[in-house]
Length: 216
Ligand SMILES: C[S@@+](CC[C@H](N)C(=O)[O-])C[C@H]1O[C@@H](n2cnc3c(N)ncnc32)[C@H](O)[C@@H]1O
Image (tube, rainbow, N blue to C red; front, side, top):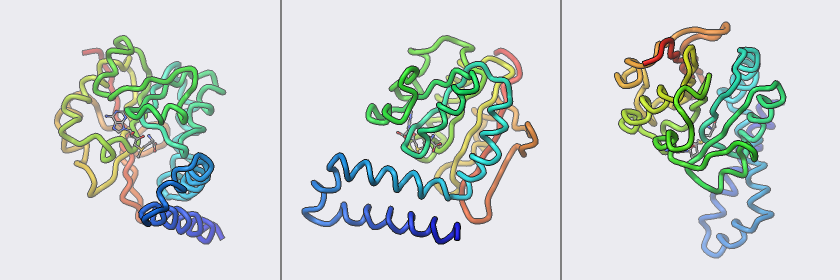
């Protein structure tokens, strides 16, 4: 049953993407009501993906209990709109950020930063966050080479002991464990009953847990 529902959302999502490419349909597809419907369909489709189910069933409950005071969630979409609310409702200050101004609508209305993550230091002080959730950003704008600049910036704004969670897709971007600018600053480690690396048989998505243990 779950598969059937997921496949229905997937089909609808693909259909709407295809319709956008039909000459003359673009105007309709960008109408605010149609866009809102598309975002809802996208959110429901994404919610059924194996990595998102692991995120909801395992990662979020573990991180909500981890005792963080202030965290940064990078990259916002309709399918992540509940994340900041979940943290804030547990007393965790959850900042969101995205390079695309329009995506602020899916972030925390009270604590959102629109910027390239490479420039986040212009907005926050050193050692500001206990955790950075960097899921789906590598591969969707940020490459392994960009991480050469970004990893040191992320390390600077983290207050040890601190978590850097990287979610990425095999085949889309370099494995962060092969990037010395990541591994020289962060230790790859199991935590809160989660493996340091979680892979999926039915998805290319990978979650890696990295930790910054000491100040630089
Ligand atoms: C695939 S979405 C992932 C969203 C979300 N983090 C998640 O858990 O699914 C990638 C997001 O990263 C944002 N992004 C890409 N490059 C970025 C950059 N250099 N700085 C900040 N955000 C960026 C995109 O605008 C997009 O919203």
